[in-house]
Amino acid sequence: MKDTFKAFVVREQEGELTGALEQKQIADLPAGDVLIRVDYSCVNYKDALSVTGNRGVTKQYPHTPGVDAAGHVVSSTDARFQEGTAVVVNGFDFGMNTSGGFQEYIRVPGDWITPLPDGLTTFEAMAYGTAGLTAAQSVEELLHRVKPDDGPVLVTGATGGVGSVAVALLLKLGFTVHAVTGKEAEADRLKQAGVTEVLSRQSFLDETTRPLKKGSYAGIIDTVGGPLLASVIRYVQYGGLVTTCGNVGGAEMTLTVYPFILRGVRLIGIDAVQVPVSERTRLWEHLADDWRLPVQEWVETKSLHDLPDVVSSLLDGTHQGRTVIEI
Image (tube, rainbow, N blue to C red; front, side, top):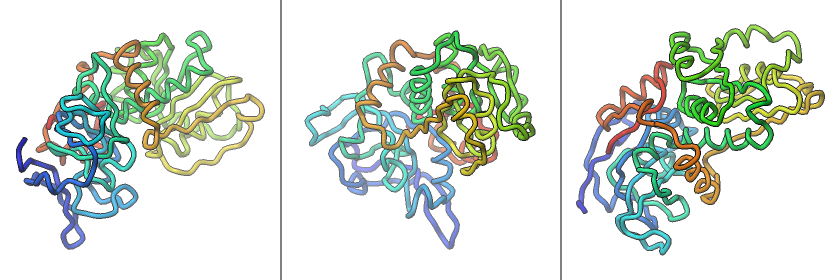
């Protein structure tokens, strides 16, 4: 093990934030039970916010972002994790106000760590990352009430990290999928993947006059939030279910109670931060086995040097799919 290692560090100088590769010491890492050599991380919207100084995500700088990491245990004082064990770390405070995955080594509490199931590599784990885990949570909730024969499922933000994995999982499980995206150029790619119908975000935002619309969807996986979520809820059929996990479209929405009291629609919030490790383990096992996807086909691999460009594309809305960072 090296005494020094490379890390992407964001520093604040005269009110401006800049990120660059630096050398850090193992002693610089926060206290924790387990030291891990990071193989891969990945880039999420929350990472982009951390890199650019969103105080709701990261309060103090200098800081190494990265809310996801997968690698192998180097040393441990926690008996659950032996040297060489392949593990994944995400959620809790990792990468937010605690040093994150955009570096060669991390040290974290044992309670933040999930052992990787057999058959799932560290690269594949980061091809999914928090986005994939969130998509898996959403699909699992949907399966409690919705079956493929019940009707199509609508996915909003279908070209983003969570949305793209959710679409792939639903198609694998035999659902008819309709997709909402603000990127019209992506319609052909979604249809080639198996999506039956691609709809524009604006088409839903323009239809806001009636409290209930035709019950077209058995369920919805929403990754956008805000007015779009308020609009699509009106299209859910009786007994349907809606999951929601994001607020890129806004944190507030205005809607009536009619979908809930006249159609029995259920709205389920998805949180990937405080999810117990036992639930994470079950979801990772699904992704390694019966829900396994050909992630290599829709993931791009970049280096720590590429992080500023990836962050920019996330913030300006041009980013597509999933980006894995090879550490």
